[in-house]
Image (cartoon, rainbow, N blue to C red; front, side, top):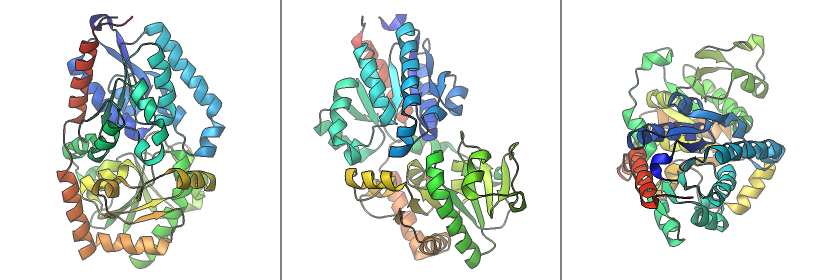
Length: 398
């Protein structure tokens, strides 16, 4: 199939952070390949960017050994649904954004069908799955990474890898925040609590964050503790975890609007990046949010909790010193990490110190400045151009 004959391409994200990055890439691809229509597994941002949905990312939003095992049949059915569309439409190429557990299997099937497959955001196989590097080497036409330190690893293993820059840098540098838009009371210290975008994460982390908030309230009762709920998560998901009753200020089953109060927290619908920019400090679940907080210049403490089986498996499989992207990028402990067994008193003490005019705050922000200097802008634009160049080079396929 020649490039001019291509009518569509497949783009798939598995979670909220990938949805944001995929949407930016779609906008850039519209400039380089304007005649191709994107279809895929989408979130709200991808849908707004014009990606026609084959499925919603909520169908893939699971994490951990037990959680995946319980949904394995549904995931297989989703895979078959996507491949049925692929066999009918014969897309020009496919872009898979992060989320390797599902995307590796899909990439193998796409490769067998002769479809060029590109990975945007390289999977962290350098941390947990070096045995799976061969799948990247064999099934992907290109792997476009966003972390500069991983380039050496992938190239040593023969993976067609290119570091394209940091899309998180691009997103945060363009973000302009008017504090009043968040609708929070003015004149009070704000501490952000960022529990992640998966329901399975919330179940482990929210109870810990509630305990940290209580300790913060005991020490500094005028502090605002704020949680943004990621798109795809609803208040109905949260209520059973934190045990809200009407007396606690539950906003009810019919939705909470864009902001509300319950269990001592202010809650926001989305707006996590905006919240980072106006917060004095943050308590963050390990993941993309740690890098975003650093780019916002917001000092943080990292907490993470998994179910016991997932933690036992991860402890044996993961071969890295730290779990947060900030520490991995800097190759040192810039931010304190509390994993699995967490002392809320210690976390509260750390995050309050970081929210004050302290030496710890100044040192951490200095490290963040150094981190930012190592990142490059223009990730989506560079990736779109690389895909265009590779497709042109391939010319045609059967």
